[in-house]
Length: 362
Image 1 (cartoon, rainbow, N blue to C red):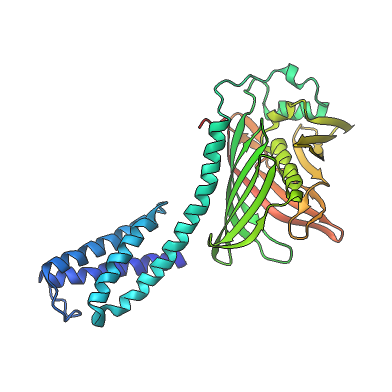
Image 2: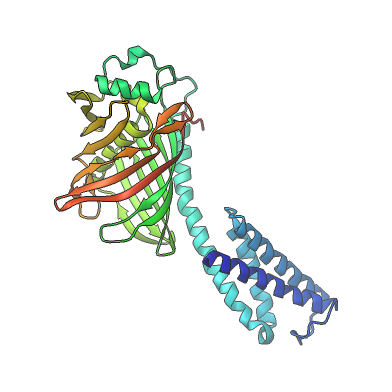
């Protein structure tokens, strides 16, 4: 709703600027302006109107760089308003609204650009042109439930995984607070474990961006309201272990082909349950994987993930459902993120997988 109000305000603001052009060239009566406007100044009023209307159009189309046009429009418009201040001073208000909106958009763009630059650097660093094909022999060392899962997903006969990109929509919440919607994109790199996750959300109507980076033996989490005001800024030793669980969870859910890695240790618990041990940078985490008779992974449970808010480790699980085709693979369509507190279970995230792509080149 606020976006549509802003669009209407900008369009009207731009059209009002046309009065200066109409007045200067005597195209039609413009009694709203009593000051004399020369033709060169009338052309500037026309340019300002055009810049404001172009800005409105780009904002309506959600163009990624509309704010550059906004800054040009604001600059010229405000100069003209100052020159004809007595009659046009109220035009400063929509310029101020546009300026604040453009500053937030620029901040969002700069914050997301940091993530995009990290992704581009990692894609260049891990670029590969040939990936071996997975055969039945690659599954032989795995527990039977894991073999069944990989066959169900459809990894046999497909290339091994170097990296992958996933996009999500969903809802998240903190304990005692309401759900808020989000969209997210992530890139994971398998040979040298790395996870770059960028989320866009709306908290009480305010755009809130978050960037989780797990790379080169470190983990960080930065969340900003309007991309200006940090509300979470973490880079702690304990976070690396927690994000190691998250990275391994991603492999199990989104890149089952990567589970053939012989550095992952397995223990069979029963015909549908196994325990896995995953190591990165001398940090080892474990998880219990639950499968159904069809071969689907239906839950991932770990006691090694830290809850950021309390900085305590609680049992963490991701129940899965709605398996469907993503390209050549059968994978989850929906998953939940759940904490198991002493007082009971708490679902804090609902994730809907939108797209998944493997082995992306720079």
